[in-house]
Image 1: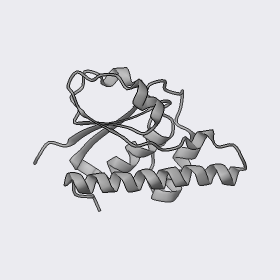
Image 2: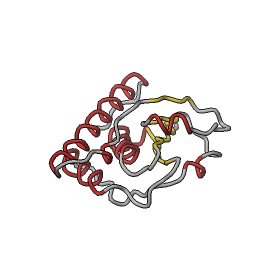
Image 3: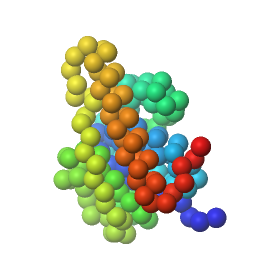
Length: 147
């Protein structure tokens, strides 16, 4: 068995986009990936709409995931660091092990103000966009998608 692809997904608050991406990549990649998420300025908890969206839209439970600071991953061996917001891309620290950096900019669904339906829709749209990007990246990387 080959070693799993080691991936860190980085966002500012580590409460929505990066948490959803972590759950999706773990689901899609299975044992072929080791995935973590972190934030440059982590929030106290994962956003409830991120948890609900992942459960309702994808059948993925991220309720046990917690926001973490990027500092705890600086000395870990990583193959990729994927930033999912512009702020995190700008604030991304230098990782001594020199992982490949990718940047995918997704809007912050937690910043959407409006009705509860509009807020839910924002989370669903961002989660779907993240899922599509991850599936494309896994396919291009030769990592088989877990069925």
